[in-house]
Length: 115
Length: 113
Image (cartoon, rainbow over all chains, first blue to last red; front, side):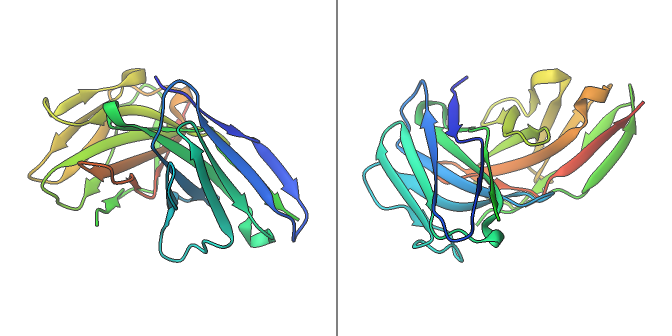
């Protein structure tokens, strides 16, 4: 199946710093990528839909100025958590849609810990 | 908007026993249905999916699920579980088209030796 990578897998940062997470589709082109957030022992909550070459669509309650999404190419989307605070600590998972298969492929996730 | 209900948050089961994890979705004209497994501190792995065709779908690791349109259900089953099946299982749904997946809250399957 198609492969999606995320980098970094883990990041620990101080409160107030910004963190960038990369999501790449390795063997297919993805015009649409999705960013999810998962708190411990909870489900995945969609944060935003990232479309190549256009602005991301954010879900209700997600601050677009805090969670900056850039989808500059058909294989790369980035999520930047700006001025991170401890409450932003979470597991962030991206997925990329392989349109011909009509299936989403998920990255391995990034564990963010803000001290 | 679609929604998914996983009725059981935790399911303990003895090794080699059968298991069923329940999933119901809100009705729609057409839906795509998925089951994913998540091991601790890892991403999601697709177990199986229903897009169209046969209502009985077979997936990896011996799992299968049956799409029941009248009951808006997509329950996951395995006839004999192993210790290695201990994980979190998520049911997900999307409408036909480009809508993102909507996930249920997950069911923690614990296989007991």
